[in-house]
Length: 327
Image (cartoon, rainbow, N blue to C red; front, side):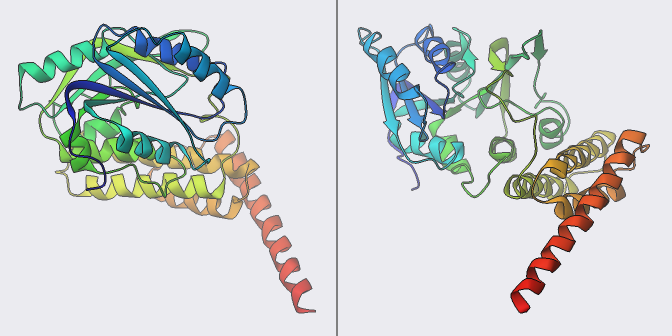
C-alpha cells in the first residue's frame, strides 16, 4: 500500500504544500484553524523554501497550540515539486477525510463541516466537492465547478475543472485513486482530478462556496514563458484526457471538451516564444490547429510567424554547435 490504510475516525487531515509563500501562508493556516469542524490535523510540507516561510509557520504554530482538537505539524524537505509534497503529506496523515489546500488560498469556515455532514448523510457518496471563489486582485468571481450528476462525468469535469481545494476525500478513495503523478512538472492537479472523476461514481456538490482561490503576485501559473518540461507535462495530461474522451459517446458537450483541450494546448504552446523550446511549441501549435480550427486572428498569425523565425534561429544554433564539436 502506497499510503497508510489505517485512520482515526472523524479526523480531517488538511495537507498544505508550500514554497516561498511567507507573505501568504499565514492566511491559509488561519483559515484551517477557523474551521467549525473538529478534530483537525494540519500538515504543512515545506518544499525547500528559501524565504521566511519557515519562521512564519513556526511562529503561527506557537501561537495556536491551545486547541486540544487541532494539531499542526511542519516538515521541511528538499525542493521536488508540489506533487511530491502532497504525496508526502498523505503518507504522514492519519485522517478519515483528506483536504488539500495550496498555501496562498483560503478555506471558508464551514468547508470541512459541510463535507463531512454530506458524507455522513449518504455512505454511498464517494466524492464531495464545493463551489469556490476566485480572487484575481480586481474582483471576486464565483465558480460552480462541474455538474457531475448531469451527462458524462468526465466531459463535465474537463469543461469545468475543479480547483485543488474544491473536493474533500475519504481515505479509501485516496488509496484507490493513487498518488499524485510525481513525474509531471505541471498540471498535476488536473491529471489527479481527472483520475478521481474517472474512478468515482456518486458525487455530491456542496452549493456553498468552500474557499477562495487567489490569483495574485504569488501565482505565476498564467504568465511568463513555459519550459520544455512543463509544456511536455501539460501535453501529456491533455493527451490522457483526450484518450479518455474518445471512449465516451459522441455528444456536443464532448466536442466542446475536445476543442477546449486543444485551445489550451495552443495557448500554452504560444508561451514558448519566451521559453527554451520554440520548435516543440511550433509542433504542438500546428498539431492543434488540425484538431481545433479557429478563425486565425492577426495576433495568432503573428505568433506563428515569430515562432517559425525563433525555431529557425534555434535550429541554426544547434547545427552550429554540432559543427563546432565535429571540427
